[in-house]
Image (cartoon, rainbow, N blue to C red):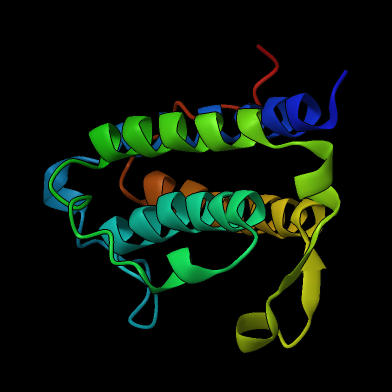
Length: 154
């Protein structure tokens, strides 16, 4: 199996669960945060969706210009944004070549070092998993008890 396909399969095993959690958040709860220092639910979801896309796009393009972009169109409907950003991210990951995954990218302005496309995707996955754990707490505290497993097998 090609490396990009393996990354895609792994991404989707987590993103499907993330999207299921997002669908449980009513628009009236977009401002919910479990503690005073927590991100509001809408901001957390937006951060998760755009971050993975930015990491993948940087791996594809070879430079981090996308990290300066604003993604204001997201907030009105989180479920729709999740579907849109998931599709965009699938397209980018699916198109990654072995050369792009091995290419070193100057990320010193953000991470203080050069990273390969493959390393960027691993950071993106770790980041998604971390915040998905946060999202489980948010959704449970919103009163939802029928929650998915942490990873999708199908």
